[in-house]
Length: 279
Image 1 (cartoon, rainbow, N blue to C red):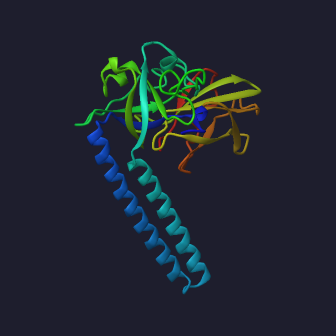
Image 2: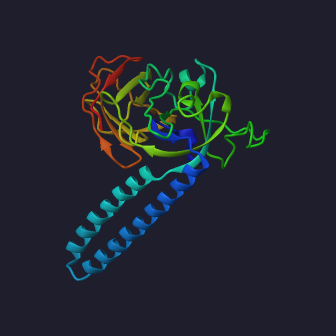
Image 3: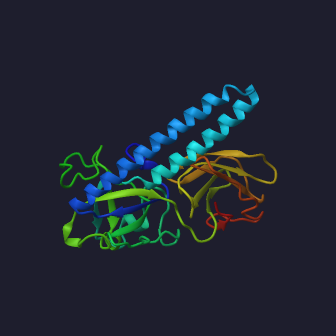
């Protein structure tokens, strides 16, 4: 969160506005999770020590299986762990948090993200999609005005989303947050832009962890071509791909890869959006 804010994609977060008593209880639950994590590490080490009695190939296969299982467990722990931050909101109904942003999504309504998606419980909470970068302001104190100054963790929310967890007059509030899986309707969306020799694609509506870290494209007359990040979630290639049906390979931060084939037909046009399968 601290060093990757300029690369924010459609990460999902659940925010809770907690009272001091609730914060204390949350701390106890986090400690319990850490104990469970330590137990799982001990079990893993024990299993690996037994593998030394097997053949080299068997030991390697077992190691790879265990490593993948541990990676999944680590991802689950990250989703369950609550972290501390602060939150405020912008009053601009059509401000940059809605129609611009630092990730290249443009109008968030057209990109299917909207202002927010809320999920309420007995503790006020809201589910957000991270689609913008909150720039630091080192000319102001981090306690007021410079809320996004490093290393402070802060959420600049839309007014509608902020109103789900706190009174709007509060201005800035302490929150607990955790990352959750992205629930999307429909498939991945690929918006094509650029020119014949400067091809760009914006990837949106990404499920699971929602954070795209790699994109490849393939035409009917090419192999797989790695695309470079232009900025935000806009990826580019200098290969002429006109008059070719296009397939994509998308990799997320959890190292899951999806390959939607023939997403765009041979007569695809710049400025159009095409939909492929979902994670």
